[in-house]
Length: 154
Image (cartoon, rainbow, N blue to C red; front, side, top):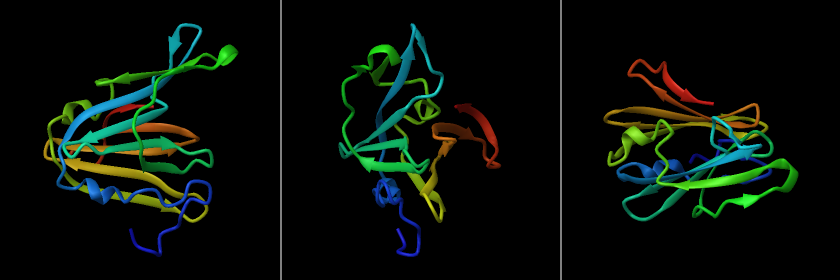
């Protein structure tokens, strides 16, 4: 990460996702908000576990930045009247699922001056996945070879 890139004032710089380049994606985990027995379509958080055992955690921050840090998946929890957060290990419902077993070839980020990182794209031989903070929610999109969306979870 270059020092000229903005840093999220609430969450700091996080980890440099370029550290994933050359690593193989071996496991996924994701958390979802569930309210009145209905689960949101988009995950709240995502964990990408690589072949070195490192768990890269991705979520939308409180200031709409995209947080990328290293943290292990946690257990789900009850939020009372607001529902619950369910964590699914070996999650296969995001665009990353089709890249399990693939090696990360490149990582690109986008930044905003006030919030820091707002998007992350990871390239695999079989395609690209974009994660972004969108109006405070985590949006995960599979991109086709031209860079356009082919499928998304948002």
